Image 1 (cartoon, protein in one colour):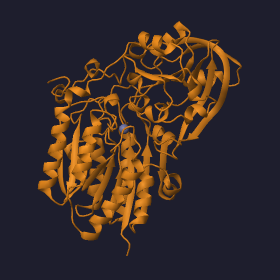
Image 2 (cartoon, helix red, strand yellow):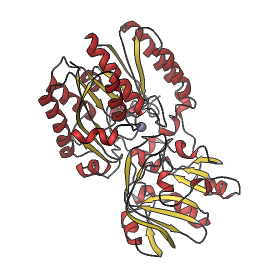
Image 3 (cartoon, rainbow, N blue to C red):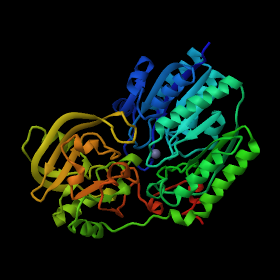
Image 4 (spheres, rainbow, N blue to C red):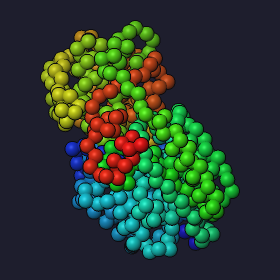
Length: 486
Ligand SMILES: [Zn+2]
């Protein structure tokens, strides 16, 4: 008999400083598939679930499809939404009594009133199936891993890449490892180390210093006999939780070897600590540099308003400077009201952006121009290296083009710039733009690094500020971490 494995998960990166609460509708709007709908939605995609489906097939496992739900990074998940989703997943686990469970988690979800929320989900599943059924879970490299998640699962496998490109590979690995645990009836030794360190997205790219060296060491660790998986959870800085920050997880058959290898990775990260300090450019200087003539776009990277980190994506600090200096290019802005208002119009004039947190992200900015694209309920399929094949919504979209060639892309949904399809879909060829504003930490590199003449990381305020000491953390555990404490 082929072992039966439940595939399920909840994926959310929660920015507790964002006022945008994440309710059940936000999950339904972004990623929601359950039961018979799971495989058609994700088979063949570069997502954890896509990889789990392929890996299960390859390993001779029969899939019991559960619920997979994901919402665009935003503020805390409502308790009702979590109860509904966790209840569905745990209920199915109890009813189906699978031989094993694969969970696709993010690892940085924060539910209102629930400490270590990803762990709370895993614990629900654990309670439904009992202590003997193995659970293998994947997590995003931005996970804030705490001890409760390590306890609830038999194995955790984190992404090894940022910008993220290995979701499918990690999902496939999770299925393969679970099949191995089921075949030999063993459970791996676990090692979990939490570091008192908080790092920010633009210093976390795995192909660049300081992380490139760390990831090379992870590769060496995983080649050691008796060591199966070592993952670095670099953490998601924008959450006021006790389990914030960098962690390393390791699994294998040889506890001593896993401990030694994990310690070596931890030491390397701690030694590199000062190399994780970001350097930032004032907006005015960055726009001056961008206004100089040259071939190819200058990317103005605004991590403080990183949509993929839960920021609103309606911050106007960079837009205001581009308008003031009359510099052309493309900026994407979340503004459902303005996007809808521009539908069916040939001209647009009015204030845009700055609706969510005007004190932090800048007030609305007046723009005027021709409406060169307008369509209701735009959707597109990601075709870059991030979550390839995943369908995502943009809501109503209007592109307003000013006389000096600035395209302001007004969207009904918050759009993560992890591919260039979101621009091509609305008639903009990114390589031909003089300036691209990317509200992103490092993920923008997948789409734009190859075409960029230069990139400047601008210093603006916001709920994803690169200088984390600007943010109002309350937890004493956070204040004990670098860069707050040395
Ligand atoms: Zn991530």
